[in-house]
Image (tube, rainbow, N blue to C red):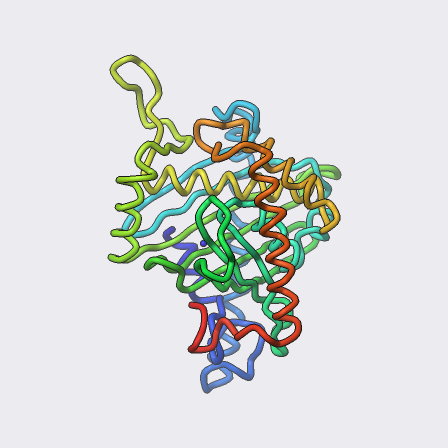
Length: 333
């Protein structure tokens, strides 16, 4: 869904039967030493992802305090290099660490979070005996309403790590995505800041090959030509700020959208609060209309409620064993 971390996801993720580094040792490659090595690497990479929050805490807190984003105390950065791009948000949440972990420790919660994005037409849980509740499937389409049966599908592996009583890590990752994208990942690193607040980093990353580059170039030359991000690269001749565009602009917009989805979910958790959550997400994005506005509130809420009805129907078919396995050769990615 960057350099360094995206490579880490390739080591620790499980994208199909027999892959190493996941939740089942029995499916690993021959040799118990290799399985154990993969499991050790998975834990070490989780610690590495949180190490920056500890080592750079003072610098991160200062960057959040001095953020140029009006109305939202977050530090947002993006990097593009060598066919990879990632965006990161650092933020302080007014949520006790234990409550944060409780609310974000399941694939179900992250489906609720993903669904708020207007491009996500449905998010459902894959039901597998080996790893129940650890795989989600995103139905991804245009911003207008689309039947989730005819849009792109993306399977992602969910993993949560409780490294100690002070730190928490969530990864959602996919080896391959639509239109030549690969190594898509969304990662949350969180730590206790004090009794009532938590410090977090949300990182969204992807890589792209030749097909992905051509697809994105077409998008940026047509519908995404005038879309901008948040980072200011300089000033134009009139002295007005020039914001990043292209890949960095796209990754910044969507990283912040996912952060706002996380924030809206924490504010309005649970399936019964869907409409309130949709309104909360929309109001957060409306703070930055130049970058994030896509449609009026009424249109967004009506469309998402319709899509949620579709999502419930898809999940019911999966639970009844009617839907095909996304990892099977006949379906999905």
